[in-house]
Structure formats: structure tokens, C-alpha cells
Length: 473
Ligand code: ATP
Image (cartoon, rainbow, N blue to C red; front, side, top):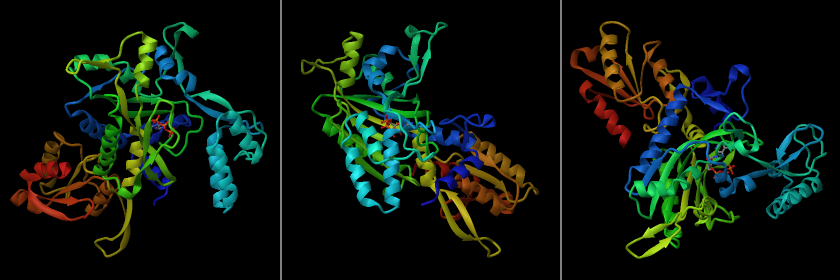
């Protein structure tokens, strides 16, 4: 397992991810994607979009980020989308009460104080309300990690939605929220999509888009941020069929990650023990990050909670009328809710590898290689003229321009060929194509495959189909 710092450093150095507003000292919990990051992000979304919507029963939408404020009353976000927060009176720092306790448990474990850690874990699992959190923090004398002080305020609820105003008047009647999840845009469009898409239950609606949460503690690079993207799908089904669909979707979503190269032992299901009041089954798909297991996607059986609430708050019927069986009902919802941003971080961690290799002169060196699936790699191929003369650059440029019509390709002439391979390995380019003296004689080039480092010589006319075949494998 490699350190998170090593991966973050590569991500910055090679232009995957930059701190937001870096020249002003950065903005906490916000990140910018650079030239390579944006390609990776786009490829992840494209693979998801193809897997989820290139089928008969799922339609895509792109709903607006700002929605009618009643949406968030109906969804329960205004009343309940809160985290328990506590302030330390000495350092004036604010913490999520549950995180503060969890981190203290980890500290106890690392000091081998397992009895006390177990006692604390039991207390945490029994928490009913904010007063319980407060009592634990006081009883166990949990200190502020920065000041060491045990002077705490009460635990209060903090709503995670970002508030703003629509129009020129900043008052309560004009308050809107930046959406904290994309799902509500799907629920409110249920009828529109069913009717215009001529869909019948079971069918789904998929969406990729930004979401905003004013998280109290952002941490671990892209894992917990304040602005991120989600890829969500709500599958509308007949009540009673949810367990069957749950199994179907949990397997499909898990396999999607495997098919894109995630290692089996870095993925697991984590079924929810405590269910939200509207859910009758839920599981997370977790990835093994350098800091431990963390959720990358949730599969939730949400019953008819969402559509019934929107029916109640909007006064509009949100039913499916089954004309074949003379039946009408509010569908149940099976949801798959994944993070693009968090997923990208998981794909970065999954791809990072270092290995010892010997160079042409017999010296041992470390090869850093991002083992992205060719479907996700930001740059699909790189073209190199072996030397920058003798007609090779012209030959290579022609090939490069031709490949550019279909793929994201780089052209590199600088430095020894070995150095050029290493530069591409480090960003995970799966195919490096070299034009050499022989190319000019017989119209062939070599293609070097990133992981095996094997080279094959093929006709220039076969290069495109070679890449297409190897990407779709
Ligand atoms: P967590 O418990 O980690 O806060 P959650 O259970 O609130 O996550 P959901 O509301 O189910 O998450 O959101 C679905 C997905 O959206 C998550 O699996 C995750 O990939 C992503 N996500 C949620 N919050 C964040 C965030 N603050 N930063 C990045 N991604 C996020």
C-alpha cells in the first residue's frame, strides 16, 4: 500500500489535481482538475453513462443545481441533513462530534488500549441524540486534537446545505440551496421522463452532476470535499420487487468497478446496520484507500418515501398506472449513488504502482506506473520519433494527427526514448508508439504496452484497430 501523500504529489506534479484558488492560498474542501485530471474525470463519467444509460430501461437527465426550496422540505434535507458539531472553547475549532470520538478510538487502539477503545465503541453505537455525543466526550475526557483542551460547548446540529438567494432581494422568501445531492432532480422529473420516454415500471433515470455540502471537516484529499460530482441512478419499481432489484444492482455496480480495473481485494460491500427510516435495505461499496476503507458508492432501497413526499408537498400525483394489470401505485425506488470525485480518487490510488526495473545500461531504477484501465487512462497513446531527424518527425507527426481524430494522444520528442516511456508510465498511458528507421522503409511502427513493457511491430495501417481492440477488451 502506497502513502496518500505519494499519490497526491504525483497528482499535483503531473496535472491531475490542483488546490482550488492556489495562488490565493487555496480554498478549503475545493479542488481543481488539471489537464490530465479532467480527462480521467470525463472517462469515468463516460464509462458510467454508457453502462447505465445505453440500455432500454434507463433514461438520462441533467437537472438544474438550483431547485424550488420546497424540494428540500419534501426530501427532509432542511430538517435532517445535519451533522452533530461541537466547538472547543480553547482552540475555537469545530469538529463533527462522531468523528472526534472515532479518531479518539483510533488513537486508543494505536496505543493498544483496546479495552477502553471497545467501551467507547459500544457507547458510540448506542448514541440516540446530541446529548449522548456530548456525554461521551465529557465522560471519556476526549481532548481537542490541536489544543489538548477538554473544554467543550454543547453538541448542536449543523445543516450541510449551502444557502444563497435568487434574484436581487436577499430575504427568506428568496432563499435557495445548492443541491446537496443530484437525486432530487430525478424524483421531481419522474413523471416527465416516464411520459416523454414512454417508459413503464420498472425503469430508471440516471444523472451525473455537481453536489455541494458544507462539510464540517474536509479531509483526505478528494474523499470529503465541499463541491463534488455524483453519478446517481434511481430505478422505479413495483413495491415488493425491491430485494430482487437490490441484488441485481449491487452486483452490477460492484462489477463495474472490477471491469475498470479495481482490485478485488480493495473492494467490499458494507451493509448498513442502522437503516435510515425510509430505507428497507442499504449497502455501501467500499474501497481500501491508503487511510483505510471508505465508501465510494451506496446502494439504497428507498421504498416509496421520496415520491410520496413529493406527491404530498407538490400536490401532484406521482403514480404509475399499469394499464395491463389495471393497477396504480407509487413506485418504490432502488438507488445507486456514486461519487465521481471520490471515485476518481479511488481509481488514482488503485492505479498507482512502483516497480524495480533495469535500464539499458543495466542500472536498477524505480518505475512509477499508473495502471489505469485503457478505458480510463487520460492519454490513450503517445507517439515518439526515435530521433528528431531523418524523416522520422514527419512520419510520426502524420500518425499522431491521424490518431488525434479518435483518441487523446501526446507527441513527445524530448530526451532518450527510455525517459519518454517513463513520463508516459507515470501518467498511465497504455500505448507508446515509436517511429524508427525501419518505419520509413516498411511502414511499420513499434507499440509498447505499458504494463508488460512488451513491444510489437505492426503496420501503420493497423495501429488504430490495435488501439480500439485493446481498449474494448
Ligand atoms: P459519507 O457518509 O461519506 O458522508 P454519504 O453516505 O453521506 O457519505 P451519500 O449521501 O450516500 O454519501 O452520497 C453518495 C456518494 O457521494 C458517496 O458514496 C460519495 O462517493 C459521494 N460523496 C458524498 N459526500 C461527499 C463529499 N463530501 N465529498 C466527496 N464525495 C462525496
